[in-house]
Image (cartoon, rainbow, N blue to C red; front, side, top):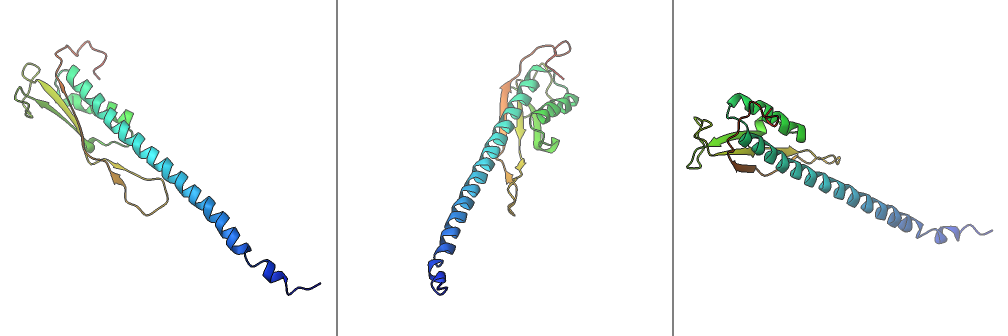
Length: 153
């Protein structure tokens, strides 16, 4: 048996093994990237929907600055990663400017803004969290009594 020919028959095996492993590694990386992109788009959509929910609650409930905490809590239920620092609830007068002295009789709109929200990645790479752009939803105020309304918190 001639053993000197064996290394020549095994010469390309390492390259073939590397090609197979690299193909599966590339496929795995593409799969992780697609999953992370899906998570980012889901979070983006949830942030927009939480902002819309906050605006809907702000326009149908009586203006009471102490009611902002339950509205923010309902938004937090929709997207648990939100914090109160990310959410701003503003009431506007007829000239569409923010008016801190608005009452139920004078306010014409409510604006809920979301800013500074960062999406944390799950892929194990040393990347910083991705900060989503600011979102804002403005709706016209609906004057209904929120004392007997189950929608208002």
